[in-house]
Image (cartoon, rainbow, N blue to C red):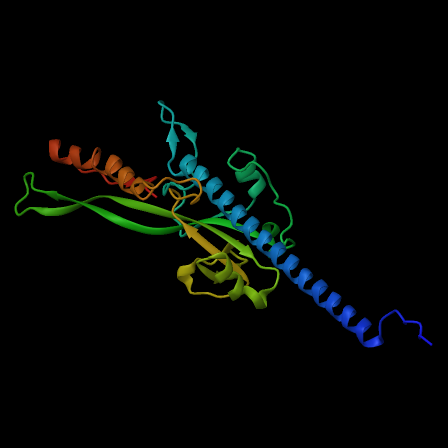
Length: 259
C-alpha cells in the first residue's frame, strides 16, 4: 500500500530561511546607512562651499574703506587695516552679517548628522584670518645718492575660514579626512574665533581655509589663481610706484582686496 507523501519544511530549513532573511535585512540597513552618511557628507561640503561664497562676497564689499567725494565714510570696510589690523575678524552673527546683506541666501542650514547643531552658530563658525602683511618696496634714486629702497606700502592678504563643530569629537580625525578639511582646531571663547590651522591646534572643529578669490571649486573657472596677481598688478603698479617715479613723492598706503 502506497504511503501518502508528506509536505512542509523541517525546523532546520525554517531556521535557514530566517537566517538568510535576517542577513539580507542587516546588509540592506548597512547599505542604506552608508548612502545616508554619504548624502550628509555631500550636503555638509555644499554648506561649506556656500559659506565660502558668502565670505567671498563679504570680502569684496568690506576689504576697503569706501569714502564719499567729500571725504566722509560711504562704506565702512571692516577688513580695511584702517579699521582692522587683524590677526582675525570674526563673523559673530551669520544671520545679521551674511544673510541680511544678501551674501547668504538661507540660514540656518538644515540639520546635519556630522554637525553639532547645538553648538556656537549652529555648529558653523566663519571668520577671516590675516595671512600675510608684506612691505612693498620701491627703488628711490631721485636726488638720493646712493639709491636706496623705500617702503611705499603694505600688501594685506586675508584668508577666509569655515569651521564646523563635529557631533562626535572622537571621530574628528575621520571626519577631517572624509570631508577634505585642512586641519582640526578648537574654539577660542575670548576672541569668538576658531584657531587658524597655523596655530597647530587640535579639537572638535574641522577647518577649511581659502583665499577669498576661491569661494568654491564648483563656481570658479580655471583662471581663478590669476585673480590675486591681477589685483596686485592693478593696485600696485598703477598707483604709488608711478607717482614715486614721476615726482619723487613717497606715500605709504595699504594695498587691499588682493586675496
